[in-house]
Image (tube, rainbow, N blue to C red; front, top):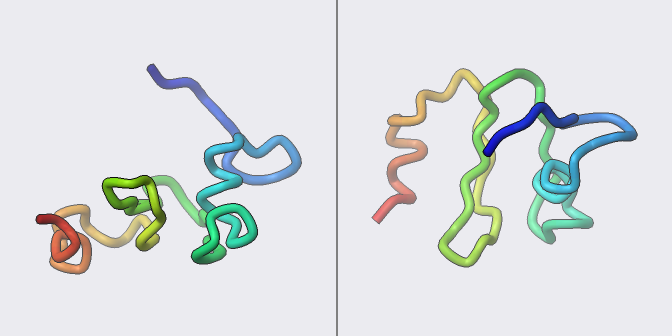
Length: 67
């Protein structure tokens, strides 16, 4: 289910290219600075927000998007 992939650079995985490029996702450019960067998508696969690793996954900043 999981494998090691590149999240930056010339050999970036297509998923991370889409997640980090406004030209690809139509919403925003995002930078992955460290492990555990969080990308929040809606039920249709649209990018809603990006949170750095220091943001707790259970923080109100993230959970306010959940219904």
